[in-house]
Structure formats: C-alpha cells, structure tokens
Length: 355
Image 1: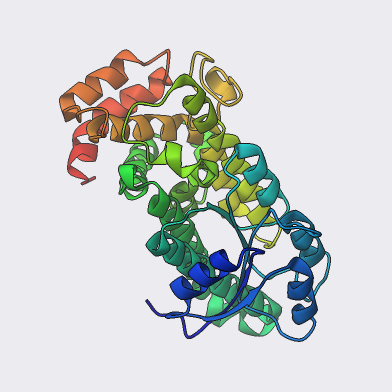
Image 2: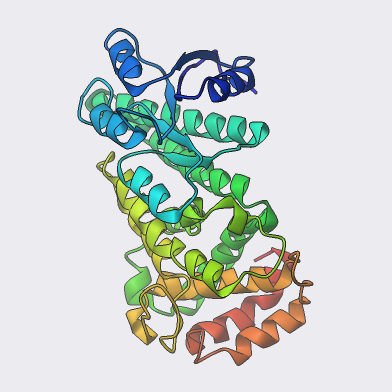
C-alpha cells in the first residue's frame, strides 16, 4: 500500500475507539486524534488533513453538526469525510451521505476493509484534484492534455467501481464482465443499424466506460445485507431495491464538481434504470416499455445474464444455455423483445468474451 504519509484526523469521544483506530492507521498514515468536534474545528484553523474519520454520536456537537460546519467553509469544504460510527440504520447512513460524507462505515470495523476504503477514497480525491488543476489551466493545455482528461475520467470511474466491488465480494468481477458484454452488445446494435437515431448521438467509448457505475448505489447498502451468504429476506430486498435511486443521487453529486457531465449522464441512466422491466414491474420507478431508456434496457439484459451464469452462496451458476433460455423466455416481460433478439444473435460471443 502506498500512501505517501497522508494525514488523517480521527474524531471520536471514546478513548478506546481512538486508540484502536490510531493503531490501525498509524502504520500507513500520520494520524491525529480528537475527542470532540470542537477540538477538531479549532485545529482545522491551523492545519488541514487529507481525510477525516468522524464519529456521529458525540456529546455537545454530533458528527452531523461537525460536517455541516466543515462544508460551510471554503477552507474545509473539500476535505473528504468518512463517518465511522455504531449507527447502522439506513436513515442515519443516508443523512450522513446527503450532508457530504463520502462513505459510511459501521463499527466494529474490519481493519483491512477500513484501510482499503480509505486508500480508494484518497486515490479518488487525488484524481479529483488533478482534474481541478487541469481545468484551471485548460486554455494553455487543451491540445496537449485532452487525452489526459479522458484517462482521468476513466480512472475515476474505475476507482468508484472498485470501491463498490471492494464491498460486494460476493459478486466480484461483475462490473468488468458486464462492461465487456455491453461492448459486444453495442457493437451488434451498430452493425444492425438498430435504434440508429438514438445511438447516433452517443459517445460509445464514454457509454462503455460509464457502465462501470451501474451498481454504484450499492455503497448505501449495509454490509450485513450486501455480504449476506444466503437468500435475502423481503425486508432486506426492499433495502437493496433502493440502490438504483441512491446510485443516481451519488452520480448527481459527482456532477456538481465537473463541467463536462456527458459520461455521468450515461452513468446515471445505467444506475437508475437497469432494474426496470419491460412490463412495468421493475424498480425503482416502475417504468414500462419505451419509457425505460435504451441504455437501461440493454444493461438489464447483460446484468441478469451475468447474475444467472455466476455462482452465489445461495444458488448454483446456470449454464450459458440455461441463462440464454431464461432471457429469451423473459422477452416481452422483463426485457425489450427487440433487444432479446440481438442478445440471442450475440450470445455465443458474450459467452466467449469475443466479438
């Protein structure tokens, strides 16, 4: 792990938590601990960290009030904040994220997982700073640096996707596989001239890259559900069903920091609509038929195909032939029938990963 001794401020009113957190982090980072939000804010007047780990339930000033004050000042607004708290209900998590936190980790935490998530967020922040620096000097660098911008966008997408997969180890590799299936599918649409009026306006490279964020909303799902090695209960599945809308909200939040939102527009469509169904029985909005954007209808097919052919703790993997049969039989109910026909034509290519 390479961190170049980044500075992390750890805030918790419990001395034991401060000691455990400091011991976990100090091998890789310069760590400064605080037992109150007030002490943190006073120190921030003199020194700024690269990241803040912030408890929620603290006397006098809780973590929510602290982050509101951080985000209200230009000097501290951009410091990444991760809530590290015993609160594990969805409402508390959504409140923290809506106030500007970049992640929400429940205690007791797994030290390796905490370190990995900190590493990923610091990488994202470093890339964001590079983008800001680049845009500030764009007039002088536009010709020489155009390719660099694209590479940075792709790096941000990839890093966010890796953050999701870091949490959802059960479906490891899903994002990369669906991205590959999508590329084959998009190529087939081009060859056939299908939906040409709509696809003519797409930047296919950005479409392909942005597909990595289709499951970004899973960062809002509790670990106890996301990593459950068994079939979900009805209540747990209801929580999972919130991830498309949350993913769209996350992407909107990212868009506030950039002027070029094209790739985020594609990503939002993927995130919000890939669980909608052709017959209107999908989620989160119950869209029906052509109300579902074309990108969402395509992602629905490749997403389900990968789920079918992948083994899970609660099910065996279907064979390729069985998965194709299920998708074909679901044309007109779950999937757009016209797209199912395209899938059937390229199913063998998707199975081998070769166009």
